[in-house]
Image (cartoon, rainbow, N blue to C red; front, top):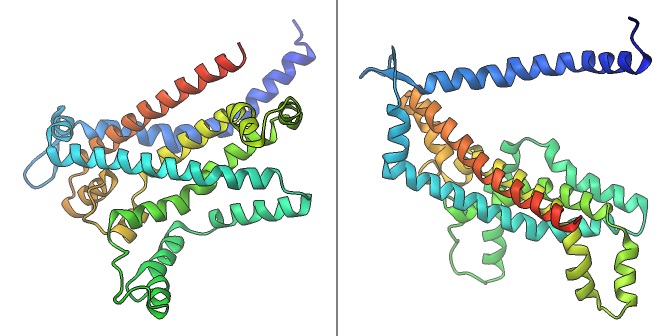
Length: 291
């Protein structure tokens, strides 16, 4: 039986997916499976891998006060970063979408995306230059006689939050800008024509319609902030109680690879739980908005 034109197109589309699926399986699924297997391997006193398997590393992760505190600190850091990014991203996204001309809008997009073309390490070192005791910020404050001695702006959690917000901000702006661009401006005009002010129209019309973009941006920022360690290591120092830094120390200093694998898998699933909660909120909101 000869295939119809539509069936041939479907077969061709599936064939186009084969390279992507193979790449996905080889470089993401397979390493993740190997990481899970490694997390159950036992080790001896010299950190050598044994042929036996157990849940000992997962038990250590969720029973050790140090690791539990690190998980809570990481989730708190990710939550604070997410909230600040959303707060700063919304005005930026609104300006991006409501720009008066196409050229100005293109310029704003270039300014927004250009930091993503730079290495995270380079951007982090730029913050070190700004926040160091002999850095630009302390130098300006001293010259203006606002402070009498340099402030300690580096090697603390505040510096990590500042650097995280700058690194993650574009990932919050773009989803919100997409939601704003899909919003019909006539709805806002109709609200104002019925007597509502600008603020009331924003709160009753524009903001509810952009909740999906806000939640999508929050999911991305939270996931990236919870798993990032380079920025925290360079700006906050290796003594910060952050779970990704604990994983880094287990790999690079202690050489306990199975424990590091168990910590990594645990962090992935914890983040997936929070992302799943946000996804559930998003689905319920969309169901409410669309009846």
